[in-house]
Image 1 (tube, helix red, strand yellow):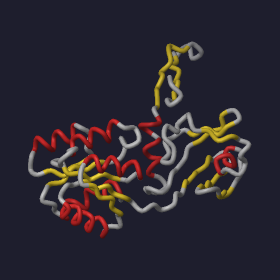
Image 2: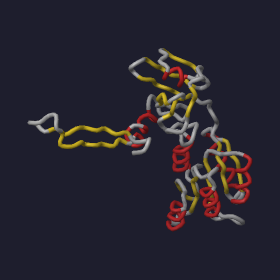
Image 3: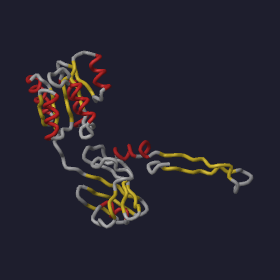
Image 4: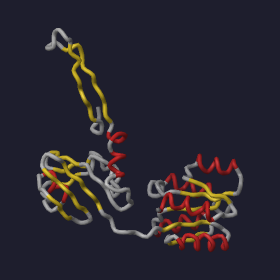
Amino acid sequence: MGDGVGAVLVPILNETHMRRPLGVLAMDIDPAIYRYPSLSRWPISSRTADTLLVRKDGDDVLFLNEVRFQKNAPFNLRVPLTKTDAPTVKAVLGHRGIAHGVGLTVESAPGKGSVFCAILPYVKPVALIVDDDELALSVLGEHLGRIGVDVIPAVDGEKAIEALKEGHPHIVITDINMPEMDGFALLAALKQDSATSRIPVIVMTASDAQAREKALMSGADDFIGKPLEVEDFIPRVRRFVG
């Protein structure tokens, strides 16, 4: 059993010989399936908060669940116990009440556990929009601006790759048919690069079922039809940038 899986062992006893177990029932509990999803939704479902599950491990505080601000946190992310001003350290050392740290709060009571919240500063979402049609870029920018999303425009895939070297958008919205580097090539480049592979990508296509299927198979997160319909476009964008 790995570090990320909990186990419950239950003895199976003989009714007449209670001291002689017939066997043991072993149950694996994978926190990634049964506990961590609920932690990410409680106490609030928010893009700027985290609920943390930690434990004391030697001279460190060990993080047990996924967190937004650090990749591969479970059983990897540690805070030394010498960092006594950290809310995570205060909690495992038995401090009671509410502690405040840099973007972190914790409510803790001995024997009852601790609840952590990581409060991150608001960051205005940024969309990289890619289309060789300047009018389309302008229209997309107007619609995104109305919902509080800043825009980085690019006229083809190559210009989009250059823009990505200067900044890290929260979403990429790209047309398929473009000169130099089309949407499929851009999508492949994004998904092959670890620095950009997790950025959501929405592709814009006409009513071409094959193109849509190819885009989704290539790693696109969603698609929208062309010509653009605002009633369809905005909800799809909000799925990824809130």
